[in-house]
Length: 524
Image (tube, rainbow, N blue to C red; front, side, top):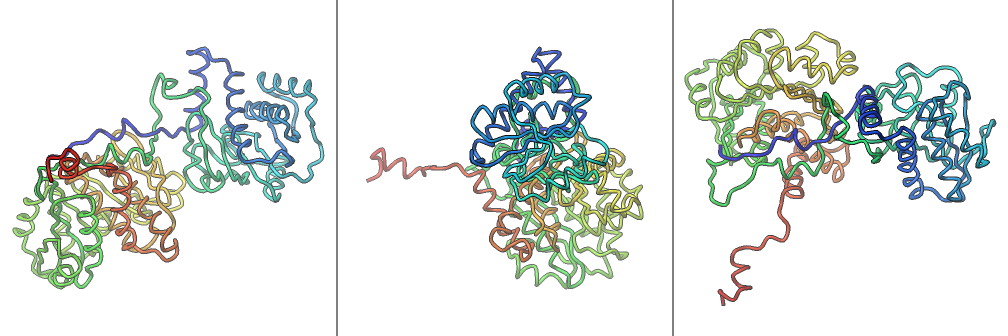
């Protein structure tokens, strides 16, 4: 295991909650001396530039403004649109209790003679500048009715910073919410824009530069990170020209039960696709011929389910650099012995998935006793069994649940859902790749195997889990483009992993040694 790579957490982007973003605003204004009206003007410009790209000057535009600073952004935007020749009207549901900055924008637009409307009619574009990230309670009364009206209109809908009615912290629906086609947010994307249902209400999210960036953090760093395509190449394990299969690590996949070889196949194949050098499946005898046929590249060690040879298992664990256990394993007595024996290893990273987690849900103290670096990869049902919490409760607090579990048991937790959350010792990671087509049998086996393969190439458990989850999601997206989200399978995800790696990691226009030699005239 000789490959090395930078820490992913150096290069990823932050996702902020409302409190963190408000602190960044404050730091920018008070420490760096950038006045609030300047930030407001820049926010309006960010939305204005997007609307110039999208909107016809013949189309009627309605900007709905609240009393807070989000409303001030909307008023400034209306002025910019008016001065550029757009037919724009402003609707203010309330005109009292405006912030100082919003009141100033209000007085300015009145002097320009921009139209204020009291009667809502037909519009081609509706802009929501009611609440932004500041809303923390359900919409009620006239505001709820207003948002419901907006959603009924046949118009392009644009949200300023955050659709009204969506929690910036959790993505939760606060009674009713503006259904945006486009959300232009400022400085940093928000957690609630990436978690469902918020992600669905935001439409496309564009982050505008208003002069608030990482320099504005000053104190404690934001808690949630997210990966982008540009992060794949610097993180992916490098390949050396002078290398062999032993250079890229060895994975032991303990998976499958009698005549249930599919999970072992998916995990072992995915480990190979990560670039891992050698993969060995430890599986019941009934699966041997099936695996050798489906995946001849893999080594296969079979065992008698009724008379498990512990010495054989220990020999294979000694051989491996990384151990994956659980996919398709079952929860019988033999499987329990396997899980308990694996947890005795202290010197190798362990990836624990599926039935290994179901077994551990009855013996949680085994987590505390193990000193090995451990990654657990539960879906919501498995997490419910591990924690005793109900699935809706986990979904509602998915970031906190993953982080709390990781801290409590000293493991790295890859909590799988429509948005997978990774709880680590370094912080929280929210994965934004993937699609609904990945909610099918075998997809989790592929993820566990792919992560294990990355770890075998000397990646830390943090970086391997984050990178593996992101690439796995991108492969799922590519599979959906070819097969459709309803018809894609785990095998389709496998087939796209190599394409994701190739597109993001391959050096373009690389010449071979012979090509260069021919150009230089040394080979005739």
